[in-house]
Length: 166
Length: 93
Image (cartoon, rainbow over all chains, first blue to last red; front, side, top):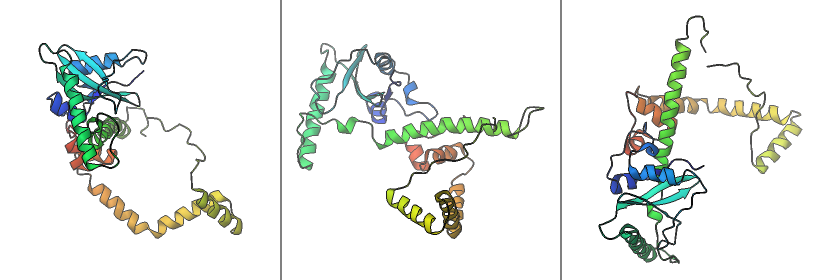
């Protein structure tokens, strides 16, 4: 059983056009048809997934709902929405073609700046969860912990009648 | 909340092989157990750096300004700026 799908902050802001909520709202609770569809598709490990074959440096999967298209990268049981967009009328896979083109351009940039060059046809590393996503993940956990601690401290400082404090 | 749960009487501490050799050797020549040596050494070390520890505690506490965001940032091990950059915390949660 996979964890619930969550978008990277870049995907949330730039691709889905949504504001970043306070850390009290976990990103896997973001209300968006793509999140709901990805959660459904990745709830069961046995569900067959469709890979984006034009991207070869990472294993990215397709998620489609209505006109929305998404690229999902699964890491340690977490399906990450790393890129999203809407297909254009009459071009069912336009989004995935544009992602492949983006990956090829990123690979060209990468190879111009790094030695040895990347052997794959695409580079999508810049889409994957990074430091700010790790910070967000930690902050969401800390917000949950703070809420629980507050309840415990309140209960300890104001025990119910007849009950000892902590 | 219950405090009746049994706390473990001892816990394992992992050290490097080099550290273990030092502890073993020291315990042998001081005629004490490795456990007692480690506990005494830690107490001695922390006492020697007590002022630094207190300064660290004061610095940590100074980050708590009564806001929920400061508590969440501290629990997450990040700065307020980092917390704010990834969404910030709700004060009236």
